Image (cartoon, rainbow, N blue to C red; front, side):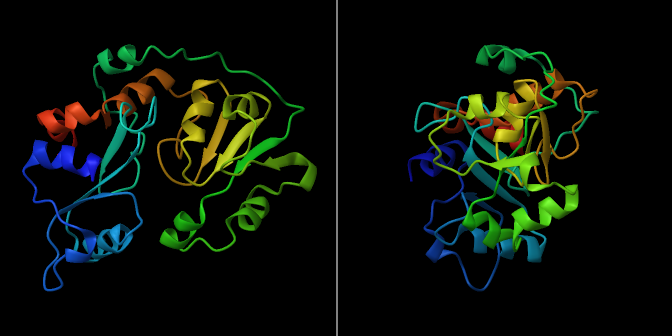
Length: 224
């Protein structure tokens, strides 16, 4: 409720529990995550062709409750638009380096499978098996990192040839660390080494917000 309450103050949208969502209509909606009925609200909005906004962990410096949260219109994450130009001030405020492209050609690819909830929401089936077949990987060409593994994510990324995932923010972090990323959904889906990483990160910095920015109405101006 803390996150949704902040956006409620900044937008004027009424604040309701998912189970109080009306059954006779599908109004424009803001949801946090896909659990507790939020995924069903998203599906109803999509079916009715009604706008929705999805809140989740930020692309950079996320964290409860002093970090950033991404807000995306009609999707679970922003797509990269090479023609979109935004100011660089919010990216500069994050003070994160963009590391040079590194070549770990002898290292395995790092597989970051989607969570069971994402698998269910997108009806993915056996994503890992399908992805291995898609890229024709042999078993020694990749290693799997699951949520909660003890190895720091940055170390796992730097020790890989590239990151392969469905929608994980690990793909965005890999690009920042100079490692290839292959994602089926989200900002890294159509991003290549010769694309402008700075442009991508500037776009993402303008698609994530703090609770104070949500409460003040600043966030809403940028996600309408």
